[in-house]
Length: 178
Image (cartoon, rainbow, N blue to C red; front, side, top):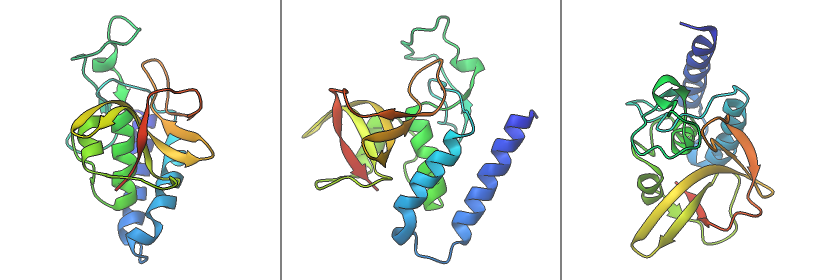
């Protein structure tokens, strides 16, 4: 096992143990915990992998080339251990909540498991991009809202998990909370 994989496995186990052992009710501290974990995981330099993070358990995994439309050819997902956008948010939320609250699936599946934020979004909410109107849900990206118009996300093939601005994105579908 490589040093990076070992470090990721140890960090994941440590964060999960700390989350499960916390004596404070999860609902009180979940949002700040989501932001802290997003930053901590973002520092690991995890690569983007189309379909990564969708194994049985949340966390980095090899991806799939099924449905891949990225600019890097041939598709590198099946040989890249990493996360796509929903794999990243799934892992962050699983660590913050102590179990896999978002479960398997893509951004469309995850947004259906959450509640739309009707007032001001808070750091730790998820921000979705695409179209969500009535029964129509066609999302294509998600990130962890950090506040101040910033999000942590796994943006695209060839990139690593990073912080990006929300400004200038015309396809913002809304903020959601578990």
